[in-house]
View (cartoon, rainbow, N blue to C red):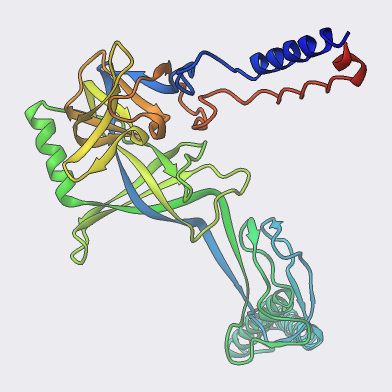
Length: 393
């Protein structure tokens, strides 16, 4: 037994030393890592509509300021701020006791004038009254009718109605305020937001350049009746608008032509006063090479893109762009049909590196760099520790 125990100890030590080895000596770490994945597009010439993004501001298609037409104290507000109101809906109630008295007095004067006129009519036939007295009685009836109409109108104006249908804003007066004293007090504003209007301008020099391109046959006219709206965050508004108005004169201060378009706004997502961009179609190209805007980079030597060859090697390619087609650049020089351009995963695409190209889907999210396009799997659970009885065995 004394000879066997040392031999067993040496065998156990040798087994533990072999288990600590993780691989063949000299193997570089990470040698088995696959190449990173990138999203690419394959360049192909095709038809494209040249567009230009022009700055503009949203405006209500109709806006009405509700003002006090009579003098009085506001007794009650009859609407909820920030809601939709219909044309003719009552908005405020102004103290109308004075106007009720005036209307009753005017009605009494009218009745008296009509009674005199009715009594004079048969007397005129028998020459009991003169023609001058009869004409004066007729004139007093007309004056009384006008005074009665004015009194009724003042009484109606004590409850100002909504002149148009639309979204009503915040009230500018409170209950107990005296309005209409020497001026037509501004009470509230109503704006019609569906549809909503956008006013923008286009440089007159750009219009002349396009006309020359059309005459030379380089470009074709595009359907400019439908326009798109680019929001402040760069996203496209889902509803397309229509061009409604083009000014016939050039603004001498800016050298631009004013244009106006209208967009459907059923959910009231667009609000007046917001700065937006109008994507305005200008011309049509039959064979154009286009790349997404996110794929184009800029440097000291100009614009360039990262391409992938047949072996998966990344290389920069200088290009020249001229204009836009929606969210894409139109490439004049540097690319040809069949080239593969990296769109997503540029942070992993170093010149000379080997990557795995995958077809790009427009609208897909950017890939995470360390995950190589795939979410990390669950962490492996640690191996359970050996029991003392097993170690002895």
